[in-house]
Image 1 (cartoon, helix red, strand yellow):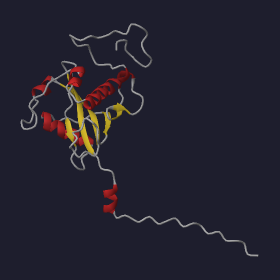
Image 2: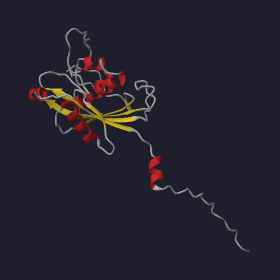
Image 3: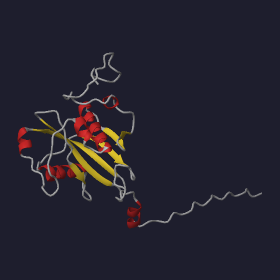
Image 4: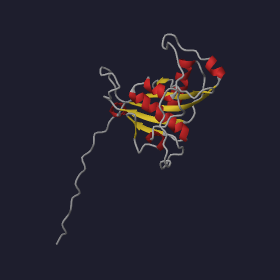
Length: 207
């Protein structure tokens, strides 16, 4: 007797896309980069940066934008934060066709007094600049930009890199973020003291 034959089900053939069709099918987002920089004579911060050009890496975009906005030629340093902003986020204008954005924040290093004296802003784009401590800077930013700035600052202090989505840490927030740590006290503000044992994972007693 002949043994029964078992046919293998045929897997439907997927239509083969051309290179152009495949490229069009990929997700497209905006790419931006900024630098976190610090003057030498005070503990204050600013975030110059902007959109990357087509095919431009985050590092090159950061270098170009810092040059265009501040007149400084600086090689960006360590990656401090990567942030994903989703389409439809409330901090984005409702009438802007926005596909989402990945932003890199890179360490711009320390500004010397000579660097600060050489700052040159494009008059058709920027009307001025100001050095602010982290709390004052956050008050002048949109909520999501303030969250990115503070996370990048704390990552610089801790020697880590922040991974953010819509201004929030993708995984558990690090201790400096959890306890809302800033760099230094500022006159005229209330700074509560934590009198008990230092919380787990926090390396300093004041928060």
